[in-house]
Each structure stands twice: as C-alpha cells, then as structure tokens.
Length: 247
Image 1: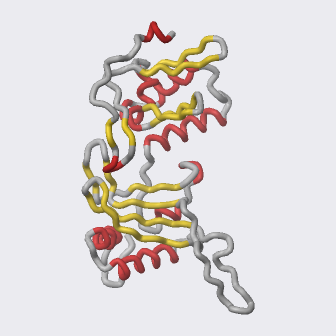
Image 2 (image 1 turned 45 degrees about the vertical axis):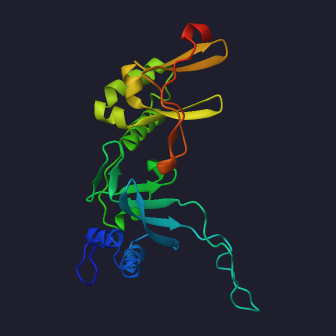
Image 3 (image 1 turned 135 degrees about the vertical axis):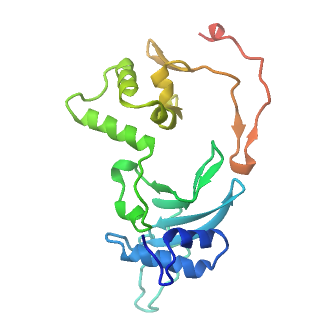
C-alpha cells in the first residue's frame, strides 16, 4: 500500500481530497505515485473533487495532451495554445465506489474506467493507486464469450445457443449486473443478461427482412435529462394500442 512521506495511505489521501483537504498537497502525492508506476504515460493527471447524488466524490482523470501541445517556436521559444488537452478521458477513477441502485457507497472500493473495455486494460492505471483488481460482471461475460468465440466453438449460430450458454456459464448475480447491448433501427439500448437467461420480458423475432425486439413488463418510465435535471415525461400512460393492433 502506497504511503506519503507523512505515512498517509492512498485511501487517507483520497479521503482528504474528498473532504476539502489541501488539494494541491494531496494531488502532488497522487501525481508522484503515478510517475513512479512502471509503464505510466506522459499525460495530464487531473484530480477533481465533485458532488453527485448528494455525496462527495473525487475523480482522478488521465487525458492525453493534443499533438501540438509541446510545440516550440524557435523565435518566441514557447507558443501559447488555447487548448492542450482532449475533451474526453481514456482513463479515470472515481472514489469512493457508489451503487446508485442501493444508494450506498464503499470507501474501500473505487470505480475504474478505461476506454475500449477489459480486453485492453492497462494494469498500471489502477495499480498506481494500489487498487486490487476485481472484475465487473460485464468483464466476466466479455472474457468468457471472447474465449468461446476465439476457440473451436466460434460464434453462436442461434439465439437459443447464446441463451443456453449464458444460463450454464453465469450465475444469477452476474446475470443481473452484466448487460447485453442491442442495436436496431439506429437505436441502441442495454438489457440485463438475466433477461436472456430467464426468457420472460425480452423477445427477439423476425418476419421477412424485419427484426423485432419486444420488451414487456410493468409501467414504463420515460425520462428526459440526467442527474438532478432528470424528469419523467408522464406519471401514467393508458392510451396505448394493444400488441395485436400493431402486429
């Protein structure tokens, strides 16, 4: 476990930043840990406390410099640029871990984001904060399916084949937390893997060259906005056609 010269642990440093501690002092500790990590990259590290869900968090964000950020002018030596960093991050960490469904946080864990998914994770990114690896259910599913598809079995040749594999390979906890992305009619959405395992509320169908994704359940929720600006479009909706009127 990494410690500062004053003996403070990684968690204690993150807690200090989260609770209005000396951000300049504690951010320097984080930067030092990152620089000394093997294979770390020469990018910009941003440490930013913020509030969400009426809770305090701290984000550690890595973003590459733009290609011309280090440009040197031979006449003026240095050139001032309006923008030197990208607007999107390829790696970030949010502390503490927060479960929005249970509305609970865990100060012993953190969210780790790396672009392109688990198969492309750079271990130095989470190791520099001395985090221990714990795979998300999405990573477990991605790894198992990738291994199957790269082996002799290859791709699934039917929906039933995928459903049987998911039911045998993953338990209920993984099924509820892992998601499957579906894209149809220029619209994409994510469905819990458990819906395919149970085959109750999600149905895929085809007629001619037209495909259908049928979702069934209780009262749907339609919202606009996000976070504190998220608003429901309606309380109840009853004036809907019957499925038999549509198909």
